[in-house]
Length: 376
Length: 212
Image (cartoon, rainbow over all chains, first blue to last red; front, side):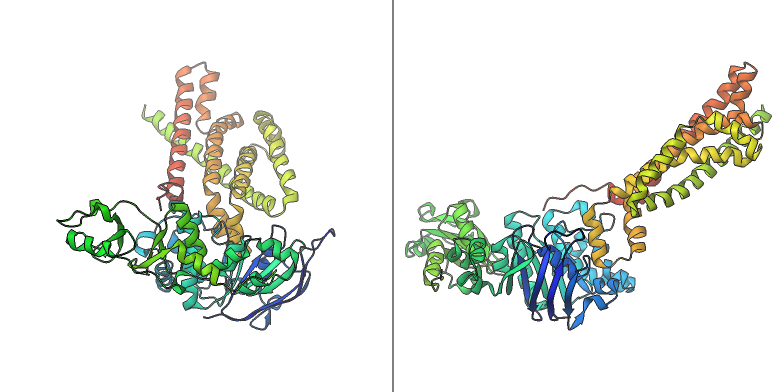
């Protein structure tokens, strides 16, 4: 089921005993099929706002409408089963296998055993976990990244039109996070769910959001706009400060390698004639030949000076490695990985891990220069 | 000799029976109390304190005192035995429920488990390791205590009958005849329950983290 509209209407939350509001007069609308990221410093009420949608927290004022219906008029259990929910610590049930975890909501909804299993298999495949390998494992046997994938699969199990994701990729290292983000965006292109996504990381907000709600302490909405607008014209000093002085650099998160004209790589396969390969690489300004396997997947670089005048190329010649980037990697992530690896060019691969081309630091710098200047 | 063996089997069965009643009823009462303590936090302190105080009453005094109320009946044996299991069960069960990670509880609620479904399908299974730890302790301690009930007469006491007889007649062999099977019974029950726990909680072992 694809997304539905979600609307916050003057939503407030005050805790008993007075004090400042946790959320104050929050109003915004997320159109069907869009990702709305709630971002802000800790204590800004972003998680509280998220949990009011599935009524883990009850607001003290206002309405939340899902597809035009007020969530407070609905049966709370039915409401929750109809909304996908992913949390930071994932919250997988430790005593259930991966397959059973994914099928939790279908089971609560009374689906048949066969249908539950079928759905679990389908979803594990969808999030990139081989069902045969993972279905019968327990959560304790998974890596952090695998757990997060299972968490996403579980949220998708009953095909809810709306998903709530509370720092869903928060508990993994940056490289894994980047990959999970990219995969999730690819999934979302097919699924077109309406998603509320909470993060404290402005870079993640800019990358993941169709719309970004910047919140400030006290649960006030500071700005609600597409990420490009927030970067180009922050509504207030607070937003400008929160986004950071490097707004121009952050705009690199809005563009992915897909949008860039990649440079062709001079490639060779093990077994190819060295003399011929040498001739080709000497004719190219870039001094390294990219060795690929029979399927076109990268193996490593060969320095043109190391290529013998006769004989064949072989795998032992490959040495220096450089980052392998996906087409969905943002320019910002690509730049940071190239700089971290201290190389001038990275290999870009397509969905099948085959070489699509090269990206260089200069290219990314050029893209940065071509951007319309940010105001303010 | 055959007579002795019949006696031993009969007394052992009685020992098991007296233990099972106390542990079973104690388990059920404690379970209700533990769920109450977890759901209504204000009751947590009083429930634990009460079970603690009950545990401090000397068993010999309690058996003797109850005779004037309930006579020499099964009830007189089982009330103290059951009471002494409460402190073990309540502590282990509340610890078991408290050990369920908060993110798991929140995820379960967010996914749409009702309160009862969450209790039975999430909290109880995850509390099993500590609940069974309590069960082992309560069983072993009750098997020991059953012997004391032999002071209520020949109809009770399980293997304790031989111990008391041996003492009265200053006949060490009979004393061993009661004590050793009682110890073996406790060890066997403990091992059996430990195996049971491994079987019903497959997620707690073979949980070797697999590298990504």
